Amino acid sequence: MDWRPNAENDRLALAILAGFLIARLVFAFSLGLGIDESYTIAISRRLSLSYFDHPPLHLWIAHFAALAVGENVVARAPFAALFFATGWMFYRLTSGLFDPQAALVALFALNVTPFFFASAGSWIVPDGPLLFGLALAAFAAARLFFAQPLDNGSAWRLWLVVGVGLGLAGLSKYSAALTAGGLAAFVLIARNQRHWLKHPAPYAAAIVALAMITPVIVWNAQHGWASFAFQGGRGVPEGGLRPAQFMTMVLGQIAFLSPWIFAPLVAGLASAWRQRADERRLFLLCLSLPPIALFTVTPLWGSRGQPHWTMPGWFFAFALMGVWLKQFGVSAGALRRWAVVSSVLLAAIAGAVILQASTGWPWLALAPGSGLADPTLEAFEWRDLRKAPIFEQSPGFVIATKWSDAGKIALALGPQTPVFVLSNDPRGWAFLDDSASFVGRSGVIVTPAADLESALGAAEPYFAALGQPQFQTLGRGGRAEVSLALIPAGGLTRRLPMFYPGAAGR
Image (cartoon, rainbow, N blue to C red; front, side, top):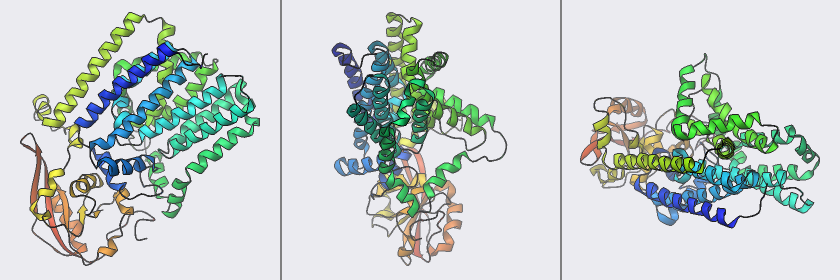
């Protein structure tokens, strides 16, 4: 193990990171903001200690990015830059644990994987800041465990960096607790690391991490622990096993990672498990397996889950994949061919996504009459909504009937228009404005045209009068994509329902 810089390999690593950064920015700036991103930017207009769906770090970044560059795709740039730094720490971690050649292979594979190229690598979601914090903590911890001997001052500094990294991860996603638990488990399991249990620095690191996530705890205490309840409830048994959900989760992970990357990742994990007496491999297994195992099996009894929940575990598995490929004796020529094919496939996928999101026609050509929803409609922005005649004068407020639509509406109309969600699942919108302060004022209800009747029924008890619906169609490439009903709503008579403890006005 050699933790010293290696000029030649370090330059190659930086070249890989720079090349993928450029590709990421081209891809990121070619797609409109997705549902979660629109929601994040709209909710983050108001700085808060924390938020309903997630801890606050990515929303804080989004807030200041939007102030600097506007509420548009350029706000993705800080997230792409953050992943550049994450990739560098990941390379140095893998290089120090094993060797630079394995680290370069792992770094390239990480960047050419669809999920880490797009979502974690540039989108306005919590995964990028989460991985940055985890990479920082893991790099410092690996130096502590495997760059011996260390003097006491160096040990203290590195443990405090571990605490800062875990604190940043905890400010990004609650699932950071799994990686922190894996790190603690490694110290307990690894015979050569148990001496740290007698040292005060690890406990100081834990205090630093807890102090950093204090805003999350305070916000939840002020709002009836709503965020903890929302996220924790997803793992609650719902009666009976659901093997179809489990298979969907497995297949989703394969798709997010791509089959040609998934297979060597699994092989790397299996190889590390067989060699877990090597504490370097055990260290990475302890970081990888908790999120992969927990979030893969939870859909058997709980909610269906999302494949990206497992990705922090797969992130560390790339290092094991890199060393396995070298140990397995894969030739340099085979690795080059694999890299070229992986790059071409990623470019083809990215190009197809950009073309579909821009024009919409490939989906119609490939899946005519299938009834399947076009997944790139998530990146279709509703900016033209502001051109509707009903918005020639700014309304007192707007009511959406879905939290996911509310973000698109809010970005289209701008921050001067308050947005509420009339639904039993309003998410973070419930914690912004108290609708009671708008009683007597008039607004507009925006709902998908197909949901018009249910929207009218839900809204009628709360307004003195509902006007004649107007219809607005939003499209791309000259073709209609989204049909909306815009309902004049006169005189709010009472507060809208509040479904969470600590919602605005409680």
